[in-house]
Length: 289
Ligand code: MN
Image 1 (cartoon, protein in one colour):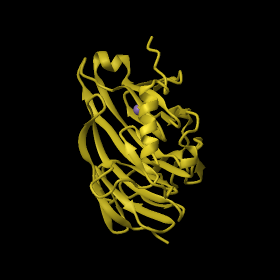
Image 2 (cartoon, rainbow, N blue to C red):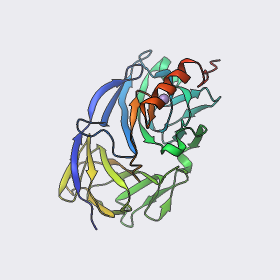
Image 3 (cartoon, rainbow, N blue to C red):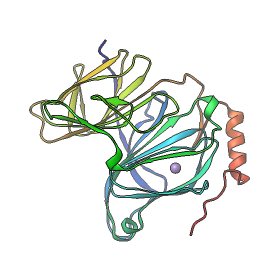
Image 4 (spheres, rainbow, N blue to C red):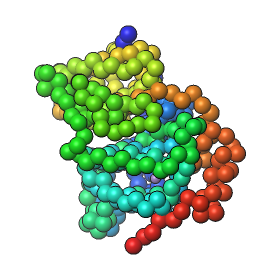
């Protein structure tokens, strides 16, 4: 059964963290989550001049996962669990905050000093109640190790970050079933992508345009998918240039979501506990060299 687009949402431009520019399709007015997806931030694209770049210095997280996917520029992540990693263009870092980390996400020293183009995504994936206090975990996949596939006619290419597409399976292990696909589409491309009936799903176009089930989605628009087990999308023959789109989906948790900034739990009491634990230093500290 073909899925339809049941709602179209326009991403809003806003400032996040230490003041970096994002386009944010989720959450939106009237749409708090697409369960289990809590947030989608498109970072930039922004071309910083020397000394202008900004990031998100030390801040806590508990109860969910942050997934960072860079397209241009590099970010350096550090946290209180002793982890430090550099995310280069095309790389993915899938961080399970679980019971809590203090996190720092800054553009590379070179971008901080010399400026440069920064473009990427960070999405937040909720954890089920039984995993909210799990140990922090990192999965880092270099660009070269992210599986890719191409359609027989060569007009559609997909980077498979989570889930499966065009017969290719992702390397990332997810706590609950999740699909994260980056589609790169030429004019005239036509794709039929299975998305299991028990998944919620969405499309987010961040360059160019597509048409899915009679609905057009343009740059900066998210389409929330209706029920079904397949989504078909095409790029008009008349389109100019490449289209880039994320297809995200997951099995809904169907649990209460109580969020206080960087803490996402199931009850107010758990949020109060998270704030206390952070204030008491129980999420640790980043050792800055
Ligand atoms: Mn963070």
